[in-house]
Length: 184
View (cartoon, rainbow, N blue to C red):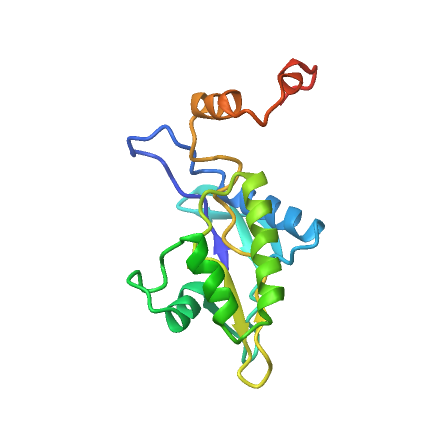
């Protein structure tokens, strides 16, 4: 599958959507380096109407009889939910993890928190029940699918001024960080 960068041309926004391909590749590489299995990716170019686009090629991990299904579907099966599985209340998500029977709940809970922490550190505001998935081989046991859909990272939906406010007003960031000689 090829992921193309989203175009912001002609849209009344100051948000950056054009670096999604680079972000997808970079973050999948980071996840794999820190021991959280993510989809395998490559960066490349693709020409569309004489415009060269930077794209991210994502390897299909559902070869053969494997298929993936999102956590929203699982949550909808195991919980009586008004949100059809899309609600992201932490207590409901953890309850669904404990009640599902596809993956050992302890393993799935550890995976959830590992991805949660990595997403938080990488500024991914777009993790939801529809983009973290399990694989089902029908003849094999279910497994946790590689992490995917990570192009919305590095606080990309925030404008520069919003990022400054976020970091400066957040008490966890030490003044020494801003006084260092390191350039961001």
